View (tube, rainbow, N blue to C red):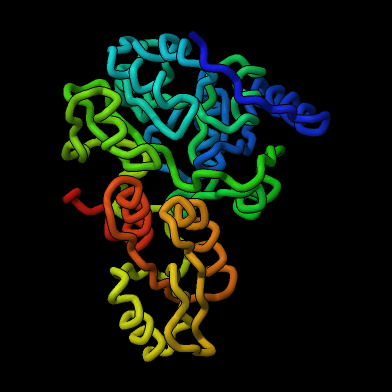
Length: 336
């Protein structure tokens, strides 16, 4: 049964924007697309030239796979050569939502989308504007994050415009992203299923849905969105620290004469003219929502280094740690 479109009245302006975006996609153009995770740089996933334009604009390596966004669970079969029971179970449980499934690709899937792999990554976003556009357009849309390769992902339309300026003919404004970090990626082309990238949907939720264990780390050599050691990075250097060590790291940066931003739940212990506090928020969900906007704010306000407090705990806290460590160029950390 097709997942229902969330209740949404776009109004005349938004509906006109969706119509214009669908027309641009049909012409092989790119548009900025809001999702619940981050804003995407969208192109017709069946149009190889349009997809290549994504790689050119993002300056993204051509062997880095893209995620195809679709408008219903049934569309899995238009892209995947096989849809195992685990994939259907996860799609029905978590779609629309921040979960990407990796499946064997049909032969007719353009390999520019898959980075030359024989698998394809598929997701059904939960943002009502994204779903309205997908269903208006009627085809899958390749939509990696709308930023230059390795830079901080955008969570507002303003971030996308600042990133690309006039290079994009249209950015649909769906407000700030409600999740704020990229989707969980699960490879269901393998047995057992394997989590390639942590996200808002945790490993425990996936295992509970499937009623079986899942592998928690990519196999060596896996190619998937979000697996580069350095990713999601601001211009400022990022130093990650557990809560107890944040103050020590901040003082060390200030002692070196660096304009320092402290990204933490609690304010700095001392005031300093070269110190900026970025209020990360108290809950993991709030910290995810704010993360990329705060990294961009640090750059805009001239920070040379960001001391970021690493959240403690399991579940979604692991996804937040993953993004912070990659922003610092340290890659992810093993699960405990």
